[in-house]
Amino acid sequence: MFLANAAFAQSPRVLVMPLETVTRDPKIFWLGEGAAVLLTDDLLSLGVNAITRQERQQAFEKLQVPAAAALTDATVIRIGQIVGATQVVVGALQLDGDVLNVHVRAIALEQGRVVSSVSERGPLSELLATVDRIARRLTPSDAKVPASPPRQQPSLAVFENYIKGLLAETPDTAIGFLDAALKAQPSYDRARLALWDVYDDEGEDELALEAVAAVGPESPYARQATFLQGLSQLYLKRFDAAYQTFKALADAQPTASVMNNLGVIQLRRGSTPQSGVPTYFFTKAAEADPDDPDYVFNLGYAYWIDHDWQAAIYWLREAVRRNPADGDAHFVLSGALASAGNSVEAARERELAKRLASSYSEKGLERVKKEIELPHRSPIERKLASNEQRTQDELAHVYLESAKKQYEQENDRLAVGDLNRALYLSPYLAEAHLMLGRIHLRDGETKEAIDAFKIALWSAETAEAHAALGEAYRQAKDLDAARAEAQRALAIDPASADAKKLLERLGQP
Image (cartoon, rainbow, N blue to C red; front, side, top):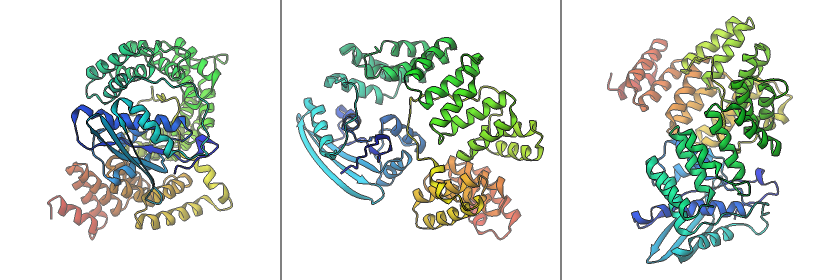
């Protein structure tokens, strides 16, 4: 069964994957996604820390997995790892006449075993009730139900149009389904939020704003709709209105993303001490969520704009600790270092920014948050607190050695955790970046692998790293770049076996 915790936000997280439709009937293709959305909603309402569809979609995009793809167990596990899940729910449904049969399994990722198996059946017209029974059977008896406003329960036809709108392949089709859902049930505000997403993707900011402006203050989606209104106002450069919108949200609940976006508004429209300077808002965001590299980048960037070089250097270094492949952070850091008189280190940071193909624009680098809040992993700092007696370099190598053992056993999740701890302590540890790149490559994440190998080469140029980067380019189908890296590896070490194997794969002896 799912584990429960009194502190809901700290409890183990559960990912519900779209259920497979056994018959592959195109008329019911929407049911697999629909059942997953309903089950996630029901689990959340019962006190289980279920992962939202939005987070799941972000994991799909990161792995470049089509939303409707049939996934292997390995891919499902990898998606679960990306979103920080401890358990994954998978399953299938089948429609026999008008009777829906649903079977799901909960799999514990660490143990790799099924911890719960549930089957339910009922008329298709009672889909919501059938899924609710499954959720209750999956939820432990000691789960603490969070206080929340009443949920908006749609009719089956409205819910079907809503899900079809989410799954539609073209904007016009999506808008058609979502408009149909709202026409049948104007109070179903969830469809308005989905419309905002469609219009936002199309750059139709006025229509996006109109879509969510109709959500009333009594709606369970009121705060999210207000957040999206603020984003549309920001994109439309209605800065005063956007400031008032986000300020109202902050007064009610000053979350990290709300404070961050207030800082962005102040950067773009100009600020006064009375209305709040950007660094104030970015500091509050970074304090609320110190794991997110965007918040510390924005803080460093704002100090850079203010010509406070030392503060900029400090926070931008924190940004690259959290995301060593952040080219813009390295670029701005190089400018701050140069202005502070540290030309040697500035040149090194600028060179790394070039390797990472940064945009090199000095304006408009501040980062807007589009989500109200998404949870993150536990802060690395807390994991290191018990080891303060060791020097950073010593501790970094302890984590590196641990990562090597996990890597050899193909425990990639544990290896990445140790590598992240090592890189937090020593951001330019070449061997750690090289291993991280190999893990990304093994998991099919070629872009991330290329970035990691570039940082490894910048930190310490070796034949091994050139050959590894060449293999990543080969898998990315950039064959010219792959050959060039193989030749660079051989120039350093003419006996490099990895470089020779790479050239053989490329058809060049």
